[in-house]
Length: 69
Image (tube, rainbow, N blue to C red):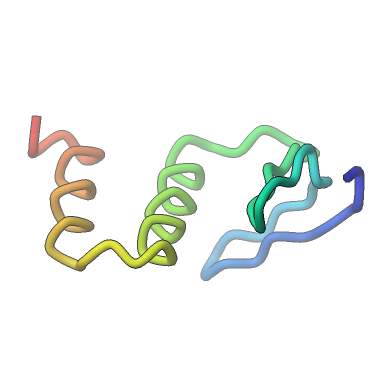
């Protein structure tokens, strides 16, 4: 923990450090707060990485954008 890192996914480039680690997953404390749209983009990438089907991902995206509420 505490190890410095850089997250680079698509257009996102953010610096931070490992805040916690457990069972192959970790949390990141970013040096600067992430803008909401950047946070949502990263959450979507994590969901895809966890293997959610694309149709379920689309439902999440509609909800985030407000059209599925």
